[in-house]
Image (cartoon, rainbow, N blue to C red; front, side, top):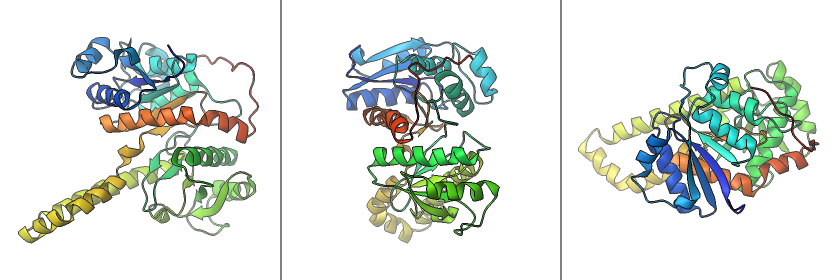
Length: 346
Protein backbone atom coordinates (compact mmCIF):
# COMPACT_ATOMS: atom_id res chain seq x y z
CA UNK A 1 0.00 0.00 0.00
CA UNK A 2 1.27 3.47 -0.87
CA UNK A 3 2.57 5.50 2.05
CA UNK A 4 0.62 8.52 0.84
CA UNK A 5 -2.53 7.17 2.50
CA UNK A 6 -3.65 7.78 6.05
CA UNK A 7 -4.81 4.34 7.12
CA UNK A 8 -7.81 4.19 9.46
CA UNK A 9 -9.41 1.04 10.87
CA UNK A 10 -13.13 1.30 11.62
CA UNK A 11 -15.03 -0.99 13.97
CA UNK A 12 -17.93 -2.07 11.76
CA UNK A 13 -19.61 -4.03 14.58
CA UNK A 14 -19.39 -1.44 17.38
CA UNK A 15 -22.33 0.65 18.55
CA UNK A 16 -26.09 0.54 18.52
CA UNK A 17 -26.37 1.20 14.77
CA UNK A 18 -23.70 -1.19 13.50
CA UNK A 19 -22.87 -2.27 10.90
CA UNK A 20 -25.03 0.11 8.83
CA UNK A 21 -23.82 3.47 10.15
CA UNK A 22 -20.08 2.68 10.56
CA UNK A 23 -19.96 1.31 7.01
CA UNK A 24 -21.86 4.29 5.62
CA UNK A 25 -19.61 6.72 7.48
CA UNK A 26 -16.51 4.99 6.15
CA UNK A 27 -17.79 5.15 2.57
CA UNK A 28 -18.63 8.85 2.94
CA UNK A 29 -15.15 9.56 4.30
CA UNK A 30 -13.54 7.71 1.38
CA UNK A 31 -15.56 9.77 -1.08
CA UNK A 32 -14.46 13.00 0.59
CA UNK A 33 -10.78 12.21 1.26
CA UNK A 34 -8.65 10.80 -1.54
CA UNK A 35 -5.68 10.37 0.80
CA UNK A 36 -7.64 7.93 2.98
CA UNK A 37 -7.51 4.14 3.16
CA UNK A 38 -10.07 2.36 5.38
CA UNK A 39 -10.05 -1.10 6.89
CA UNK A 40 -13.50 -2.19 8.06
CA UNK A 41 -13.18 -4.66 10.92
CA UNK A 42 -15.99 -7.11 11.67
CA UNK A 43 -18.02 -9.96 10.26
CA UNK A 44 -17.22 -9.96 6.58
CA UNK A 45 -20.64 -11.06 5.34
CA UNK A 46 -22.38 -8.31 7.32
CA UNK A 47 -19.97 -5.68 6.06
CA UNK A 48 -20.31 -6.78 2.43
CA UNK A 49 -24.10 -6.71 2.70
CA UNK A 50 -23.89 -3.03 3.72
CA UNK A 51 -21.24 -2.18 1.14
CA UNK A 52 -23.46 -3.55 -1.61
CA UNK A 53 -25.64 -0.45 -1.15
CA UNK A 54 -22.85 1.92 -2.20
CA UNK A 55 -20.29 2.68 -4.83
CA UNK A 56 -16.86 3.15 -3.31
CA UNK A 57 -13.15 3.07 -4.29
CA UNK A 58 -12.37 -0.63 -3.84
CA UNK A 59 -8.62 0.00 -3.99
CA UNK A 60 -8.85 2.12 -0.83
CA UNK A 61 -11.11 -0.10 1.25
CA UNK A 62 -10.49 -3.55 2.66
CA UNK A 63 -12.22 -5.84 5.12
CA UNK A 64 -10.65 -7.62 8.08
CA UNK A 65 -12.90 -10.48 9.12
CA UNK A 66 -13.46 -10.56 12.91
CA UNK A 67 -16.04 -13.01 14.17
CA UNK A 68 -16.62 -11.80 17.73
CA UNK A 69 -18.26 -8.69 19.18
CA UNK A 70 -17.59 -7.24 22.63
CA UNK A 71 -20.91 -6.25 24.17
CA UNK A 72 -21.35 -3.08 26.23
CA UNK A 73 -22.02 -4.90 29.51
CA UNK A 74 -18.99 -7.22 29.38
CA UNK A 75 -16.13 -6.69 31.87
CA UNK A 76 -13.62 -4.76 29.71
CA UNK A 77 -10.30 -6.42 30.58
CA UNK A 78 -11.73 -9.95 30.48
CA UNK A 79 -13.40 -9.23 27.16
CA UNK A 80 -10.15 -7.94 25.65
CA UNK A 81 -8.27 -11.02 26.83
CA UNK A 82 -10.89 -13.62 25.89
CA UNK A 83 -12.34 -12.22 22.67
CA UNK A 84 -9.17 -11.95 20.63
CA UNK A 85 -11.15 -12.24 17.39
CA UNK A 86 -13.43 -9.32 18.27
CA UNK A 87 -13.63 -6.23 16.08
CA UNK A 88 -12.21 -4.05 18.87
CA UNK A 89 -9.20 -6.27 19.59
CA UNK A 90 -8.41 -6.84 15.91
CA UNK A 91 -8.75 -3.13 15.15
CA UNK A 92 -6.50 -2.11 18.04
CA UNK A 93 -3.88 -4.65 16.95
CA UNK A 94 -3.79 -3.06 13.49
CA UNK A 95 -2.72 0.17 15.20
CA UNK A 96 -0.26 -1.62 17.47
CA UNK A 97 1.39 -3.34 14.50
CA UNK A 98 1.55 -0.12 12.50
CA UNK A 99 -0.71 -1.47 9.75
CA UNK A 100 -3.16 1.35 10.49
CA UNK A 101 -2.56 4.84 11.85
CA UNK A 102 -5.79 5.02 13.82
CA UNK A 103 -8.81 3.05 15.01
CA UNK A 104 -12.35 4.43 15.29
CA UNK A 105 -15.05 2.64 17.28
CA UNK A 106 -18.54 3.27 18.64
CA UNK A 107 -18.30 0.06 20.65
CA UNK A 108 -17.70 -0.63 24.34
CA UNK A 109 -16.00 2.34 26.00
CA UNK A 110 -14.50 0.19 28.74
CA UNK A 111 -13.04 -2.32 26.30
CA UNK A 112 -11.69 0.47 24.10
CA UNK A 113 -9.99 2.18 27.04
CA UNK A 114 -8.57 -1.07 28.40
CA UNK A 115 -7.47 -2.27 24.98
CA UNK A 116 -5.93 1.06 24.12
CA UNK A 117 -3.57 0.79 27.07
CA UNK A 118 -2.97 -2.98 26.96
CA UNK A 119 -2.65 -3.42 23.21
CA UNK A 120 -1.60 -0.10 21.67
CA UNK A 121 0.31 1.08 24.73
CA UNK A 122 1.30 4.50 26.02
CA UNK A 123 3.96 6.80 24.67
CA UNK A 124 6.97 6.41 26.96
CA UNK A 125 6.71 9.07 29.67
CA UNK A 126 2.93 9.46 29.52
CA UNK A 127 1.53 8.37 32.88
CA UNK A 128 -2.12 7.87 31.86
CA UNK A 129 -3.90 8.48 28.54
CA UNK A 130 -7.03 10.63 29.00
CA UNK A 131 -10.20 10.60 26.90
CA UNK A 132 -10.68 14.06 25.42
CA UNK A 133 -13.86 15.05 23.55
CA UNK A 134 -14.59 18.41 21.99
CA UNK A 135 -17.80 20.02 23.23
CA UNK A 136 -19.71 23.02 21.84
CA UNK A 137 -19.77 26.39 23.60
CA UNK A 138 -21.01 29.87 22.74
CA UNK A 139 -17.51 30.73 21.45
CA UNK A 140 -16.59 27.52 19.66
CA UNK A 141 -15.43 24.09 20.86
CA UNK A 142 -13.83 23.34 24.21
CA UNK A 143 -11.69 20.27 24.91
CA UNK A 144 -12.70 18.35 28.05
CA UNK A 145 -9.80 16.28 29.34
CA UNK A 146 -10.33 13.76 31.00
CA UNK A 147 -13.94 12.58 30.56
CA UNK A 148 -13.80 8.87 31.26
CA UNK A 149 -10.43 7.14 31.36
CA UNK A 150 -8.93 7.95 34.79
CA UNK A 151 -11.40 8.19 37.65
CA UNK A 152 -8.69 8.63 40.26
CA UNK A 153 -5.96 10.83 38.82
CA UNK A 154 -2.82 12.28 40.38
CA UNK A 155 -1.68 15.89 40.12
CA UNK A 156 1.20 15.01 37.78
CA UNK A 157 -1.27 13.29 35.45
CA UNK A 158 -3.53 16.34 35.31
CA UNK A 159 -0.51 18.44 34.35
CA UNK A 160 0.12 16.09 31.43
CA UNK A 161 -3.58 16.27 30.51
CA UNK A 162 -3.21 20.04 30.30
CA UNK A 163 -0.08 19.81 28.17
CA UNK A 164 -1.52 17.27 25.75
CA UNK A 165 -4.85 19.08 25.63
CA UNK A 166 -3.17 22.36 24.76
CA UNK A 167 -1.10 20.80 21.96
CA UNK A 168 -4.09 18.90 20.58
CA UNK A 169 -6.42 21.90 20.71
CA UNK A 170 -4.04 24.30 18.99
CA UNK A 171 -3.37 21.87 16.15
CA UNK A 172 -6.84 20.45 15.62
CA UNK A 173 -8.82 23.69 15.84
CA UNK A 174 -6.22 26.33 14.94
CA UNK A 175 -6.58 28.19 18.26
CA UNK A 176 -3.27 29.82 19.08
CA UNK A 177 -2.14 29.60 22.69
CA UNK A 178 -5.39 27.97 23.93
CA UNK A 179 -6.66 28.99 27.36
CA UNK A 180 -6.30 26.12 29.84
CA UNK A 181 -8.47 26.03 32.96
CA UNK A 182 -8.83 23.68 35.93
CA UNK A 183 -12.34 22.62 36.94
CA UNK A 184 -13.09 23.67 40.50
CA UNK A 185 -15.95 24.76 42.77
CA UNK A 186 -14.76 28.37 42.73
CA UNK A 187 -12.36 30.69 40.95
CA UNK A 188 -10.12 31.28 43.99
CA UNK A 189 -6.81 29.39 44.11
CA UNK A 190 -7.34 28.19 47.70
CA UNK A 191 -10.68 26.47 46.94
CA UNK A 192 -11.28 22.84 46.04
CA UNK A 193 -10.37 19.36 47.15
CA UNK A 194 -6.85 18.07 47.80
CA UNK A 195 -6.23 17.14 44.15
CA UNK A 196 -7.04 20.52 42.61
CA UNK A 197 -5.22 22.38 45.38
CA UNK A 198 -2.12 20.33 44.61
CA UNK A 199 -2.31 20.68 40.84
CA UNK A 200 -3.08 24.41 40.69
CA UNK A 201 0.47 25.65 41.48
CA UNK A 202 1.93 22.99 39.17
CA UNK A 203 -0.16 24.29 36.27
CA UNK A 204 0.84 27.87 37.10
CA UNK A 205 4.49 26.91 36.78
CA UNK A 206 4.05 24.65 33.74
CA UNK A 207 5.80 26.11 30.69
CA UNK A 208 4.18 25.91 27.29
CA UNK A 209 0.55 26.23 28.40
CA UNK A 210 -1.65 29.29 28.84
CA UNK A 211 -3.09 28.50 32.26
CA UNK A 212 -5.85 30.95 33.21
CA UNK A 213 -6.78 29.46 36.61
CA UNK A 214 -9.89 27.74 37.91
CA UNK A 215 -13.16 27.46 36.06
CA UNK A 216 -16.60 26.66 37.44
CA UNK A 217 -18.74 24.26 35.44
CA UNK A 218 -21.35 26.93 34.71
CA UNK A 219 -18.76 28.96 32.78
CA UNK A 220 -17.81 26.15 30.41
CA UNK A 221 -20.81 26.54 28.02
CA UNK A 222 -20.07 30.27 27.76
CA UNK A 223 -16.64 29.49 26.29
CA UNK A 224 -14.54 30.79 29.17
CA UNK A 225 -11.70 28.38 28.32
CA UNK A 226 -10.45 26.34 25.37
CA UNK A 227 -9.13 23.35 27.35
CA UNK A 228 -10.82 22.20 30.56
CA UNK A 229 -8.80 19.89 32.82
CA UNK A 230 -10.20 17.51 35.46
CA UNK A 231 -10.18 13.89 36.56
CA UNK A 232 -12.46 11.51 34.69
CA UNK A 233 -15.10 11.34 37.43
CA UNK A 234 -15.71 15.08 37.31
CA UNK A 235 -15.32 15.17 33.51
CA UNK A 236 -17.83 12.41 32.91
CA UNK A 237 -20.42 14.11 35.11
CA UNK A 238 -19.89 17.36 33.16
CA UNK A 239 -20.15 15.58 29.80
CA UNK A 240 -23.30 13.62 30.63
CA UNK A 241 -25.06 16.65 32.14
CA UNK A 242 -24.03 18.71 29.12
CA UNK A 243 -25.48 16.15 26.68
CA UNK A 244 -28.64 15.54 28.69
CA UNK A 245 -29.41 19.20 29.20
CA UNK A 246 -28.80 20.01 25.52
CA UNK A 247 -31.14 17.23 24.41
CA UNK A 248 -33.84 18.30 26.86
CA UNK A 249 -33.67 21.96 25.81
CA UNK A 250 -33.90 21.09 22.13
CA UNK A 251 -36.98 18.95 22.71
CA UNK A 252 -38.61 21.62 24.89
CA UNK A 253 -37.98 24.30 22.24
CA UNK A 254 -39.49 22.10 19.53
CA UNK A 255 -42.52 21.31 21.69
CA UNK A 256 -43.05 25.01 22.48
CA UNK A 257 -42.97 25.92 18.79
CA UNK A 258 -45.74 23.43 18.04
CA UNK A 259 -48.22 24.52 20.74
CA UNK A 260 -50.38 26.84 18.62
CA UNK A 261 -50.93 28.13 15.11
CA UNK A 262 -49.14 31.36 16.01
CA UNK A 263 -46.09 29.50 17.37
CA UNK A 264 -46.02 27.28 14.27
CA UNK A 265 -45.99 30.32 12.01
CA UNK A 266 -43.22 31.78 14.14
CA UNK A 267 -41.32 28.52 13.86
CA UNK A 268 -41.37 28.79 10.07
CA UNK A 269 -39.87 32.27 10.30
CA UNK A 270 -37.07 31.35 12.69
CA UNK A 271 -36.38 27.88 11.25
CA UNK A 272 -33.26 28.88 9.23
CA UNK A 273 -31.67 30.71 12.17
CA UNK A 274 -32.62 27.95 14.63
CA UNK A 275 -31.24 25.27 12.34
CA UNK A 276 -27.93 27.10 12.09
CA UNK A 277 -27.74 27.53 15.85
CA UNK A 278 -28.49 23.87 16.52
CA UNK A 279 -25.84 22.86 13.99
CA UNK A 280 -23.24 24.79 15.98
CA UNK A 281 -24.16 22.75 19.06
CA UNK A 282 -24.21 19.40 17.24
CA UNK A 283 -21.65 17.22 19.06
CA UNK A 284 -21.42 14.78 16.12
CA UNK A 285 -19.77 17.49 13.99
CA UNK A 286 -16.64 17.24 16.16
CA UNK A 287 -16.07 13.53 15.59
CA UNK A 288 -15.10 11.37 18.55
CA UNK A 289 -13.03 11.49 21.72
CA UNK A 290 -9.37 10.53 21.21
CA UNK A 291 -7.28 8.73 23.80
CA UNK A 292 -4.37 11.13 24.04
CA UNK A 293 -0.89 9.79 24.71
CA UNK A 294 -1.13 6.33 23.12
CA UNK A 295 1.52 5.20 20.63
CA UNK A 296 -1.20 5.16 17.98
CA UNK A 297 -4.51 6.99 17.73
CA UNK A 298 -7.70 5.47 19.15
CA UNK A 299 -10.95 7.45 18.81
CA UNK A 300 -14.15 6.59 20.68
CA UNK A 301 -17.46 7.86 19.31
CA UNK A 302 -20.90 7.74 20.92
CA UNK A 303 -22.57 4.35 21.14
CA UNK A 304 -25.46 5.63 19.02
CA UNK A 305 -23.21 7.26 16.42
CA UNK A 306 -24.67 7.79 12.98
CA UNK A 307 -22.64 7.92 9.78
CA UNK A 308 -21.86 11.64 10.10
CA UNK A 309 -20.10 11.17 13.44
CA UNK A 310 -18.12 8.18 12.16
CA UNK A 311 -17.12 10.15 9.05
CA UNK A 312 -16.03 13.15 11.11
CA UNK A 313 -14.07 10.91 13.46
CA UNK A 314 -12.21 9.45 10.49
CA UNK A 315 -11.41 12.95 9.23
CA UNK A 316 -10.23 13.76 12.74
CA UNK A 317 -7.73 10.89 12.41
CA UNK A 318 -6.44 12.28 9.11
CA UNK A 319 -5.71 15.68 10.65
CA UNK A 320 -4.14 14.08 13.74
CA UNK A 321 -1.74 12.17 11.49
CA UNK A 322 -1.03 15.15 9.23
CA UNK A 323 -0.18 17.36 12.22
CA UNK A 324 1.93 14.59 13.84
CA UNK A 325 0.29 15.19 17.21
CA UNK A 326 2.11 12.31 18.88
CA UNK A 327 5.43 13.63 17.64
CA UNK A 328 4.56 17.01 19.11
CA UNK A 329 3.70 15.42 22.45
CA UNK A 330 7.16 13.83 22.54
CA UNK A 331 9.04 16.96 21.46
CA UNK A 332 7.14 19.63 23.37
CA UNK A 333 6.72 17.63 26.58
CA UNK A 334 10.34 16.47 26.60
CA UNK A 335 9.51 12.77 26.51
CA UNK A 336 12.61 10.72 25.73
CA UNK A 337 11.78 7.67 23.65
CA UNK A 338 13.55 4.31 23.38
CA UNK A 339 14.51 3.07 19.93
CA UNK A 340 11.85 0.35 20.20
CA UNK A 341 8.80 0.48 22.45
CA UNK A 342 8.48 -2.47 24.88
CA UNK A 343 5.90 -5.15 24.18
CA UNK A 344 2.93 -5.46 26.54
CA UNK A 345 1.29 -8.75 27.30
CA UNK A 346 -2.50 -9.17 27.15
